[in-house]
Image 1 (cartoon, rainbow, N blue to C red):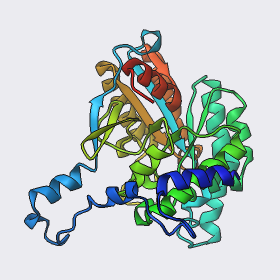
Image 2 (tube, one colour):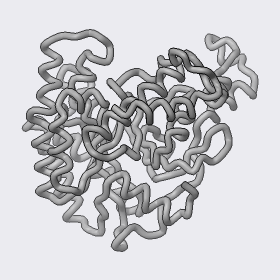
Image 3 (tube, helix red, strand yellow):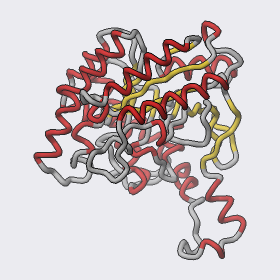
Image 4 (cartoon, rainbow, N blue to C red):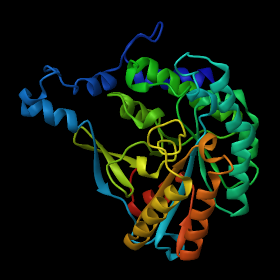
Length: 335
């Protein structure tokens, strides 16, 4: 692990506080927390205007960054992403270690990920794979599998799929720095994209992500299109590639949950979302989890979606990094 690099990043994020045991908290991160409501959270109907505006303005959508044309004069950009959580969401992140759930996590990298990678390779679709660092540490061969084609991207999805909203800023920054170093060491490339575990930000997350120099962020839901993030009313030059629970397999493919849907029905929802994105000339971003969609009866939804997208035509398939760099260049944003 690149400890020197991590230490430099942490000092930059958390400076000028002296960090003996990373108990410090930078002015930048402290400013992020200062916008959390200080009035009684049990009676929000009594909050002042300032409290409400401070709450909603912590992180907002800025300008729409949809380019006038996508590469190859495509009508729509299609970004397939896979959150490779495996064992991290099967008890490791909470410390509730149980053999049964952990076996399901191993299925993710033992069976499901190879099935997913074969599909996107056979279809020549560049894709982005977001990893909690521990998911990659447990099975580092996943990086070689993904890197073999030379077309995919590996990005960061936390350290152990921690609940970052429950962490202090120092711990959150330390874990993200560790995750970046670990993923770089295993995959051979430093991640340029960040997706928060559980798709949520703490008051300090955006400040930490900005200070660590990420190209893009992909956790939030302000829009269907790529856009610039705004923090406390100020543009950040950070690109958001938005997600949405409608375009995620996990909530609706859990056979033990009370919202379970047939994968073929979910496929139709994704097809309808894609068709509207195609009509609007914007962005279609899908988030899947190998341990969910990599099962035999579920991967048919992704196969059917890909078949529909290719039949429609005028599509640019890209990794998140490729899309973010193109959007940045078209918008002439400062890095």
